[in-house]
Image (cartoon, rainbow, N blue to C red):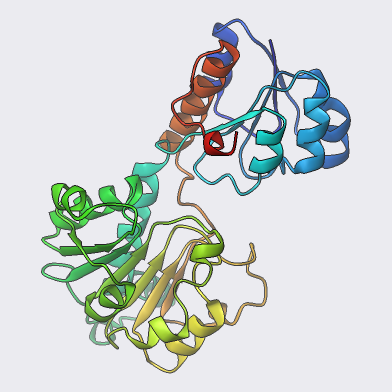
Length: 317
């Protein structure tokens, strides 16, 4: 069958599709061309750039489109309802970048607690700012997780290697299941905000999680606490975060994701108690290979008329 890949993909994923006997086309086509061409293909494989909006999905449904695969976790660039309405399965690769994102979350914690970016910048200016850079250990501190899925659980495991205590808020995971991963469940988000020294978000951006960290929640944090967001922009109210950082309500923040990307003219760029990275959580060689191959495996299953493991819009169909 014919598979269209419109975003850069690991070669291992492309070879997997070819080895399964499929005709693979790679073309970073724009939205207009995609709308014209999509009906010729049985499968569409994307990352974050391509937007599989309703018009694209409907056009594909007029032809042979059976499955849309997202080589990553988030599927906010795919219209799930339109796909379900047209009996098109949407699959993803939720396990592909788990280690990569969890490692970046820990890296942000270390960078903030030990002033790594400030130390680097002053050294390169020829300064020896040792006395200004007294930091804090992660050892014995409390990590609060907002979202305790695959990435949250692995972040907890890494944190426990630093002898951190881990508490978590996730209404969809039971106390017993969290306990298996060494996480103490908190039923209220407020308990995470009040008690954690580091807070790390690991949840999707959906209407229920929009600004889940807002002015009220930030005001409950310790003035010595840090917040890390390697999940999705829009889960943290950036204006409220800026004010909290500027006013010393909290000690600092590590951000890999933003409401608008890139975050041009964001006041957060002016603060020195923030560590910023350009949405690189999943951007590792290993993570990209895993995300691509896992997604390819899911697409192959659908084209073979088998049930995929990671069927995102199943409940909508």
